[in-house]
Image 1 (cartoon, rainbow, N blue to C red):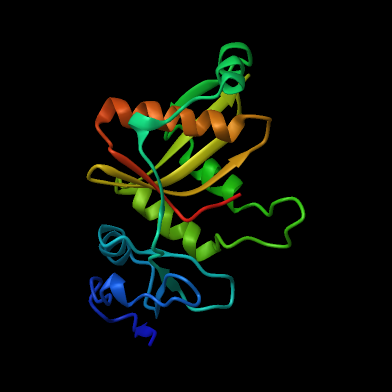
Image 2 (image 1 turned 180 degrees about the horizontal axis):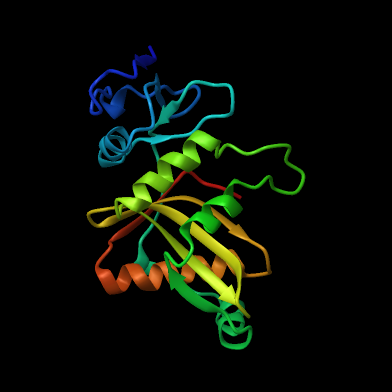
Length: 195
């Protein structure tokens, strides 16, 4: 049975993740709000929001999860070549809001986006608190790829990525992996498999 959260419920009022539905896989709760406190409480429990415009906030905790271990990341030869020859520059949080906007933009062949105005405001608030971050690829002064997510403890929870040029998002992920190795982040939680 799906748990409904009221906006006034305590931020940590999530059911145990073991109660997530099998159909749809991982759906745990609905409702509540996207306050910074609720989002942090959710991520600490392996729960994230994902919903479409017009729906209540839906909270998910799929099992199994798609995770990436930075220490095991393998950079392809083609990406190594692109990083060496394309003039990519890697930056962290240089323009978080631009990365968020690019990730929220409709994709080719897709009518809309799941990153609603409310979601954008929530992650921008997390960024202002030093919790949400962006890994960015710039070339010739232009943002060409990026990924944003939430970092808590030794985990980076990836939310979305975009690319305006070939290899832009792959280069951003590679930069994020290198950053995680440098700062001791052990896991990149991709949440669920995406093609």
